[in-house]
Figure 1 (cartoon, protein in one colour):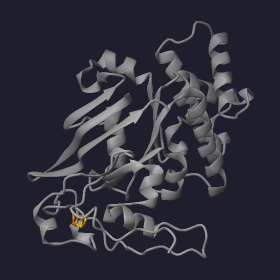
Figure 2: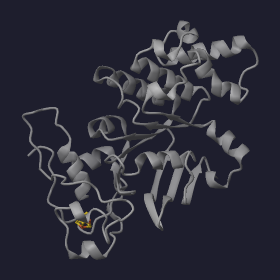
Figure 3: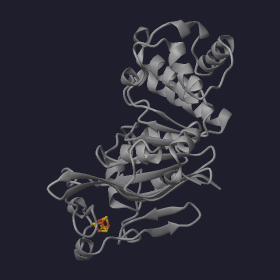
Figure 4: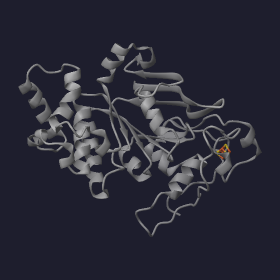
Length: 326
Ligand code: SF4
């Protein structure tokens, strides 16, 4: 059963002159208990807005988000605050997301205080010490301040804060992108270990396809506000069926320089989300576009039901065989 279910989510921003930015334009996905869905795409494709709309940090124009069986859009302020105990977020920039005026202990304890989750100061400090321990930091650091820590340590503090209320679901918005390469693997492995020990579901937003392959059980590829392909992670990387997914994979660096890969280069910038192309929104950059692509918005084609693999392309079943190693 799904823990989180997102259906036909739209987030449109009016910008004056009768124009609208269609940042999120009909996004649907499910995430199960303890599962990671990777959400990938170029910058500006709507993936971070989707993540924020799921938590109601931005209001959706339409669509539903159901968490643990409850439609979040129908909750009152009080009910939403209660639901948010189980839904947390870790931000991309650990330098900007932690208040510089609060000690580490105060930062981590803040959600506990808001929800009145402890009785005495001693209980509070014990809880903070346990959370620091869980993220690989010494409890002795709770009296220190964020500026005294490296980027990787600050992100661990942000993760400890997100864990404070024992969440079932965390949005990870590019959680290691701002970190030095040398510490990215450590923080990524910490997140994966915490998921295993606590059965937390993640929505992992990112643009690094190798990292997403490493962390995600399923992957959704977004282009101009819409998911164009979604599948189990292995299936998506070995049998991509949408030309945009192929372009992203072709552009990603290969760790082994002796290997080559089918080329499907991605030319130019995406069109404006204010003026979407007719028909398929990828057609202006697609090497496989045909006349029908300008006329008909492609529905999802089921590639394999066993791996829940779907792609929104008229020719998803007719593309050449993809090879990671050719
Ligand atoms: Fe390309 Fe047409 Fe498929 Fe769109 S529907 S991705 S334009 S081939």
